[in-house]
Length: 546
Image (tube, rainbow, N blue to C red; front, side):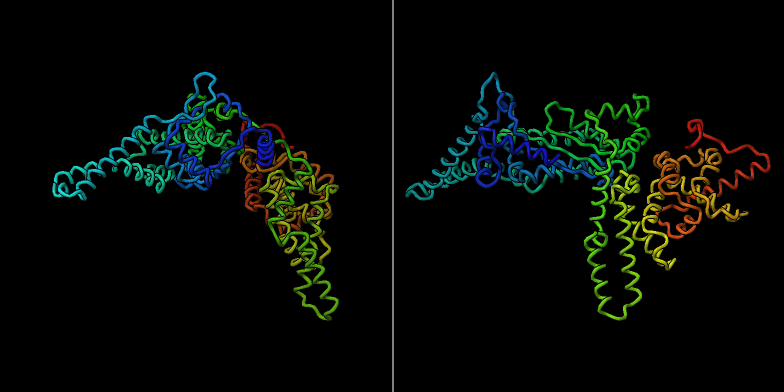
């Protein structure tokens, strides 16, 4: 989106008749001159300008999750970034001498009007200052008059009074230059006596209004439209009350019709909606979080399912974050070690094992990158899950080589597929492993090691369906059930002996899930033996789990 906006901005610049200005260098002096002596006017020509500059500001809610008022972090981030974008001096001068832009009357194209009151005040102060200095110089230098003490006092008083206005203005600018808007809001937030009062929100609102007026002034000065794009991320990992506070801050900033703010809210609705429904902001909306989001978000955009090419790009981006997994580095390491093995008669065993591990890791990631390989279809669409798979495959392969000692079995492709299986369907895989463990411990059949995991899952599916209420939260971790069937029944028909070989090196599967399943399964069997009632089922979770 940033690249597209930059490309459009360059195209509009080539077509526009007036080149935009920037408050830098000589432009800074010109901006200060307009701030001091001119009023900005919003004309029809300005509203028709198609040259738009987008100021992107990223707000990670997790960075401010520890503070009491998360929404205050949003406002301070906005103020701080605007201050750094345009510079501290123009904004400080605007606080003291700036004038709020007003709309033009009629079709006038005049964008700047002289401040007559400011000019008269300035000339009056300069005249009084000059008069006072003249009287003081006459009282000090002219013979016969310099002995009169009263004349010196009058000259000094007139000079000090006239100069005090200029000094006060300079002190106000210096104060706003040293104390930013972010520091002002942080001081208000830290004051426990003031945060509970109505004046707190009014002062924060006043700071935001000054910022909006300043952006309108800079629009006219730079001869282009300005839009501030706030990217709000990591909101779905904060506490529920903090989530509601940020959304309320968004509504507060967007309450005016002419605000130049655009909010991009990147969240997972399945996480945000329960957070909103736990807070008190749902009163009057029938405790419906989806209804609240529909009234807050004006342009909903749900990202469609990631395609094969995008999945491979996401995988490549995750691999690039690990320098030890990059293909060129791995390949060069393997070739270098093989060359050393050819010249050196005796090579340490640890180096050979490391080279073999690197080769296996390389082969596993080659299978993930191969679009023709069925394994690439099962890559998750979430970047966090992709990075987790990228980080887990090397560990799994190294543990396999360390435990088995035979580099060829199991294959790197099978190890990568097992890691993907454990990441995408942790509940169903844990259930299969628990059923398999119980079968091994009781009276294992002679052909148990050759049975497929899918047949074992089908055989115990009814028991898993009966335990769906206590396992409801764990079942929500699994991906598409139909893909699970295709994975185990067609593309990767793992057998019981494969599961037994992989179980000791499976590091990306929470084994407490399997232990909980074992406990529930044992209790269910006891209840059946003693004729007790079956485990309770949830009225919402009906039907059979596919």
